[in-house]
Image (cartoon, rainbow, N blue to C red):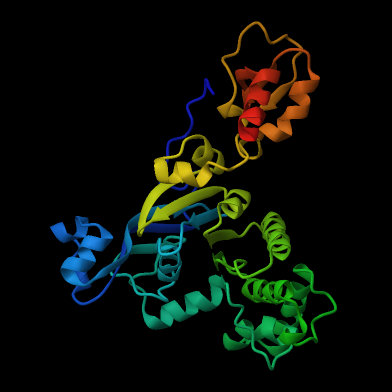
Length: 356
């Protein structure tokens, strides 16, 4: 596949605007004398070699990235890759060994305990795999619990909780107890509870991995819907590539505590950073992920003056009908600028390759 466009390089920086979240050189090493390892030759050892030499285990190794306001940033990797340790360090549920975390320009790693508590109550919420609902409280009271802890008035918190119950599709279940709900419904309660405090940042730590596949798909769709409606900044942890590709504006892939690649879903699939990522994406239906910028050819006179124009970020599968319906190439644009063209063969090449 060829392209006249120069795809954006892998970058740790947020694509536009100021950062909602900024992480710089973040480390977590478990074991005695962990803080003395960073900056020494031992820090360059592999995870296995460091454990053998010092008894310490690297959870997260020199990780840096930025997340833009309103972005869904997915962190993925296999079990033991460090992704859950990373998300817990963002609010210091796990204390970093070294590094800096900022939310909206405000330092987290150096914050006092009282400041940190206020941050957790008002500016950031987490949704975990295990729902953590209070079994003796009804749905409405579970959703309102965080507002109660931070001291909101009863009438205000119950009104807000009812709004969130309706928002996540649990209308009519506000007086139910958690054990009367399915797993997917319980996770909706957890999601409503996280949203109730109107946080600036939502952190999801593999929230759907314990759910059945159909319920999991419904919850993924729910996250997409809520993101479109509310525009919240989200950091989503998962070990599932399909989930990462579906939800993420950008994806960070981890292995042994380190960053392997950061990029848009189409970048990760079209240009894997190494064999590890290449193996991850080998079974991905590329027509569902790749955009026209990855399959287009240079623009020539083959494209007629009245040829349809499609934007370069349109997914191949979504563009297929328009391309196949037109006799001849279709033009591809980046905004107002024409940058290439695609025809039947370019589209079918991707489809046939994934069938093979």
